[in-house]
Image (cartoon, rainbow over the protein chains, first blue to last red):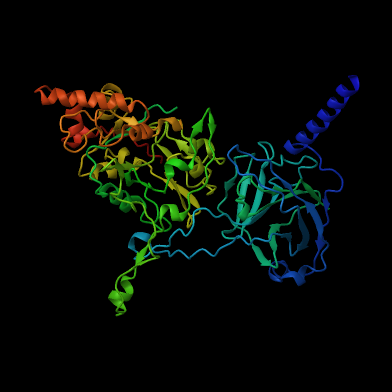
Length: 244
Length: 333
């Protein structure tokens, strides 16, 4: 009886500690470090150079987790994308992050260009082709205030004391910078950032150009699979990693 | 909880299915990129497929305090917007006939005037639909970005286009399927109850244009307003699908006339042309009381008396039908 109670307590502590760690204010564990390669290439050549430009840069496979069902009304989802390969290079005063992951379904379209002429003066309008498709996407999350030491913001889009910046890329809609201070607070800043993407042989390669970040900065990654109706918190996510 | 609540009453006995409301709304609000397929106001033949198809059976709304699951309707359910090849015919000298493209296969009034059969007799009526601006909106609850809010001053439910990220949980949650996704903007849109008009003292475009004069607009909580009188005093108007739990603020005077052919003088409840079960399906069991009440009012006038409820429902002029309170608009310098 006592042993069982002890076991329950121990597992409770474990669960609680992992929950606290996911919430806020915890130190990422060892093994969650990411090395940053110093590259002599220009930021632009890494952004647009294709796979060859990245061959020399060490890759780290980062495990992805699937968010639990957030709403009772959600369809179930499976862990189809178990990991993302991350390469990071510092070049020309920028930090370039390449995310590569396997996704057999290419969920992206090219939206028709919308004319600047007011729609009411135009003979034809661009029409909604489908209302029920979602697109592949990925994101890099960093604390808004760098150099905040060992305290990482909550993994759930930061928290009130620890706002985060989210560099969000969508296979159809492109790159946009977002900010958040906790779940449900994510907002668009109206700014974008340089990004480049390619889909080949069932694999996405997406390069994000971030401002340079100091050693010790925490970063986290997320991947959305459009064909699985991923959007919002319905996604794959990594735990915080630390830049070396 | 909002301080006041704008509401609309539509008298289904007066709707002639002319779609003037639909066009008024479309020209004013959804004549933009990405909005071709969407009709914030639509009029469907009831019984019928509805718009989007089978919306009444898809899902959403509340049950025992929980949101109910629902798939997203597809474009085939709404009907793709089509364009005509006027350019080729009129300007490029091509001899083809003017044709729509893509080929229309469904639409917002695809099965117009088909209706249903009650034994050997056909029946239908028109059901105009807008967002219900519910007191307990499922869409608002479903939005993880808190992009949907209910205006405190008048209870109108709107989607903040700056916050909306196009997740479409709201479309799934709405049991009336009255929110539409604009793929061009990547945001969801819906009827805004013409709040910019109301703020200037003008009634909603759909109500202003209605030749059948079947729409009544005002604050539900204002005893002077026609909607207050029809819903709460005369008790002749009911919300659609009350069991969905969202507490709509659009109410319908159910069709209560006529009885079947060659049965003049009989009560609709003795020999209804529109099966009572169907009306109960749409408006809940209270519809029987409403029909009884309306028939009693009708009888009163036929015997030379005067019915306040029917006088109001005639809605002779705009002053009778609409009770709009221009709002003080704060100008921030």
